[in-house]
Length: 252
Ligand code: PEP
Ligand code: MN
Image (cartoon, rainbow, N blue to C red; front, side, top):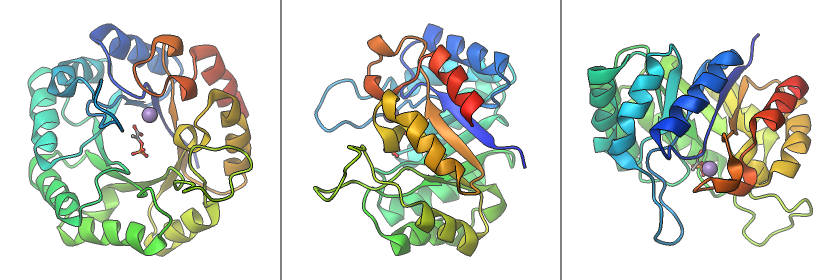
């Protein structure tokens, strides 16, 4: 089966950056562009362009690419979908629940809004929470489907677990548990992607994580790619430039 690849910048930063990235992905046949609008940070600072970036994503959909962004609050669902409907193609959207929205109430409300407001082509990706707990990850999926969101429109993504001061000989940002990811994939019957970037935490470690992930029969990969990583406003160290991305695609 062909792997699903979601690639693009960590954060949407400007119209030029989003559309330049969309063009680069189109040229490489990558069907889904990622770019986060909301970026809650450890400390106050750049926390994403928010709804100002929706029109850039809308423009990207008009290039025929699907756009993927994280929704942290229920209102983000309408904020993204309405904006894209006005200026782009609302069918070409994927929204995701990231590691930082771990209130089941919010997860359910996001799922409900998506069920009621999104075209049926719009999918929801569920990333695992930061701490290592299989039952919690399965619980998010249960809450989302129990809120009425159809499982046929759900994807999963393993982004590793916070090391929490434990053993981390490779110095990874987040520790993968590919066996657990495979189990969750089996138990739910849902497609499982691997977020290489948030596991590796550094460009140098991405090929090694890709090699490890390849041994499992996952359904695809998410990877951060920036037109000029040195000036990226978030996660600069882990975003690939286009040459590095081309090499990774060869490897995958
Ligand atoms: C992301 O993919 O942009 C992100 C913030 O990842 P996570 O929620 O897995 O930390
Ligand atoms: Mn990131």
